[in-house]
Length: 344
Picture 1 (cartoon, one colour):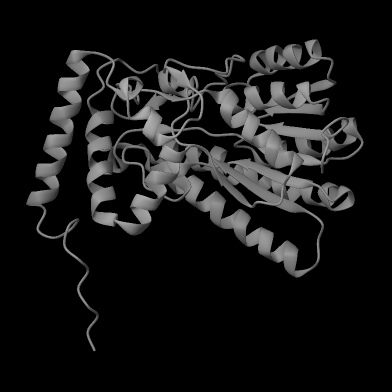
Picture 2 (cartoon, rainbow, N blue to C red):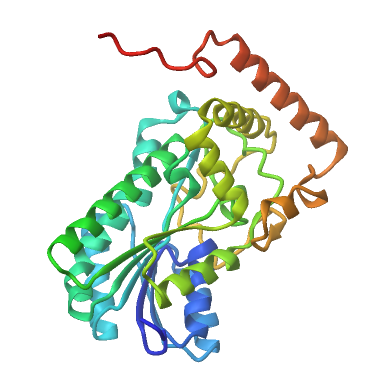
C-alpha cells in the first residue's frame, strides 16, 4: 500500500488521544474513515476535523467491552465504506494502582477494552481484510515488552495483544494470506489519559516529566500503513533504550522500574470518580497535561527538557530513586542476584 487516498480505515478508539490524532492524520492523506469508540461527543468532534480536511468520516458509538456491539460495529463500518483496507486499533482503558488494590471488576474491564475488544474487532474484520489484502495496524506500547508498576492490567493487556497479533501474523503467513499485521510501540504519550484515568488509590499518578506528542505516533501509524513491511516499530530512541535495557541488563531495568513505581505513587492530585474506565470520557482531545514533544534521540532529550518540572519535583524524583535503590539493595537477591543454575 503506497497511497492512502481512498483507503477505507476503521479506527477503534478514535474519540481521544492517539486514535483521534491518527484519524486526523489519515484524513489528511485522503482516507475514508469510520470512527469507533464509546463517546459519541468525542467521535463527532474528531469526525468534524476529518471532514474539514476533506475526508469522508462516519461515527459509530459502541461499548468496546461488549463483544456483540463491537462485532456489529465492524460489520456496519465495512458496509458504509464498501469494505475495509485498514483496521487501526488504538483503544485502551486503565486502572491506576497496585495490583492487589485494583477491584477485580475494574481490572477485568481494563482487559476487556485494551485486549479483548481489539481481538474481537480483528476477528470480525478479517474477512473484509482478506478481500482487500488489507492491514491490521495497532498502537502497541513499550509496555507490551516491559512491565509497568501500578498499571498491571494495562501491561497485561498490551503484552497479550502483542502476543496474539504476532501469532496471527504467522498464521496468516503460513496460509499465504495477503493480510498484514503491524504494530507501533510508543513510550509515554501526552494524552488525556493522565488526568482522566480511574484510580484504585483515589489519587492520580504523578505523570512522567513529558511524553511524545500524539501526532508523532499518528505519523508513525500513517508511515506503517503506507509501508507495512516492518511488523513492529518502536518510536523514540529513548523508548528503544528501555527495551534494550530490560532485555540485556534486567537488574538495572528493574531498578529503573522500581523508581518509576515510586514516582507514580507519589502523585497527590485527586482522581476523578469513577474515571474514564467507566465513562465515555473521550471528548475529541488529542493531547493531555504533559509537555508534549517530538521524537528525538535519547541523547538530545537527556538535557534540560527532561529535567523535572520544578526544584520540588527534582527533590522528590531524587528521593524516589534513592528509596528504590535501597529497596532493591535490601531485597536479598531478588532483583540484583543472577538466577541460580538449575539443578542437574
